[in-house]
Amino acid sequence: MKVLSNGKYKSVLHRSLVNKDKTRMSWAVFCVPPHETVIGPLKELVGEKNPPKFSTKTYAEYRYRKFNKLPQ
Image (cartoon, rainbow, N blue to C red; front, side, top):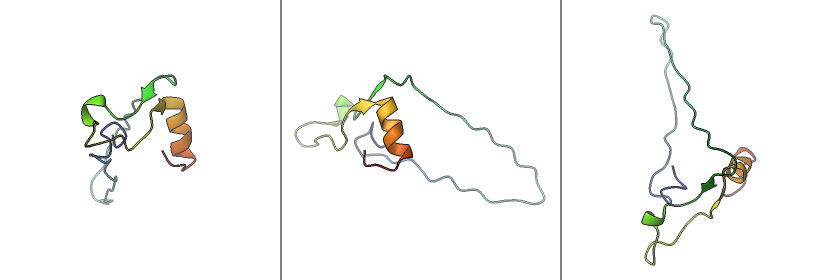
């Protein structure tokens, strides 16, 4: 979200509280594009006054950098 929006939007932190009296159900939902998919700021959100803050890269490279805590 942060890369696609060129820093305008950030992903939220997930936090939850445990309730001992009620059952809690949750679903994990993942969207994983093909490794060759190109990821970068949307062209509609960059321009002369708002240059790209993130480089364009493949999803495979993005994921590698994210999991290894490298700068995007």
